[in-house]
Image (tube, rainbow, N blue to C red; front, side, top):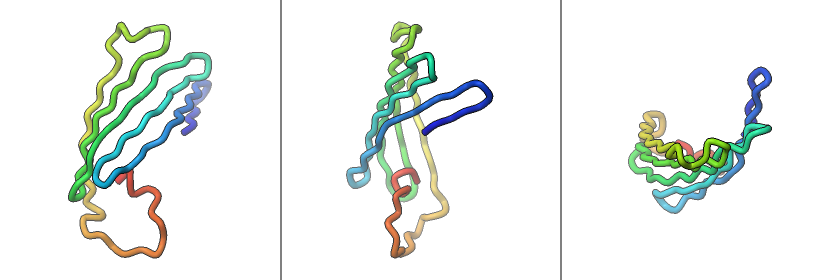
Length: 96
């Protein structure tokens, strides 16, 4: 993922893997000129609800002494409560 807003640029590179109802992934966030964080994320999905936890391990000059960043998430997907058959592979299913 590449983000640019005015002079600010950020690159996030990583991957998520799904295992049945569980998922996990790692990311590296770099803000051109400043290595920022390594991110680990885990979670589970069931019945249109996704619970997740991620931790940003600070690798910038701030250092891990600041405690990093903990994030908890709850996503409720009301669009696809009933699964509809599709002839296409749904690559974005992991993010719903």
